[in-house]
Length: 56
Figure 1: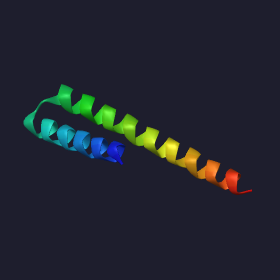
Figure 2: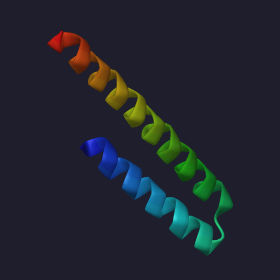
Figure 3: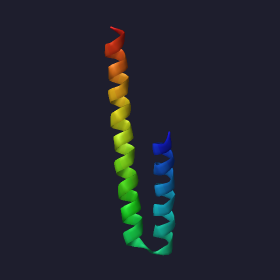
Figure 4: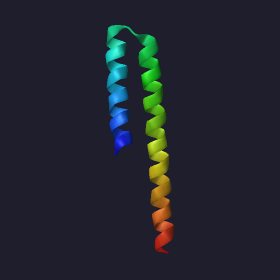
């Protein structure tokens, strides 16, 4: 669950940086949060499929 924590922290950093006008920091934090989010989704789907295959 540490990945979810990082996604939330980076999303908050991105929002705060955007409000303060730090567009470079906001874009970087948002990009990293997006990459971590999609990596988490992909690993979750792979784990789910592995669980289905293992039960057969």
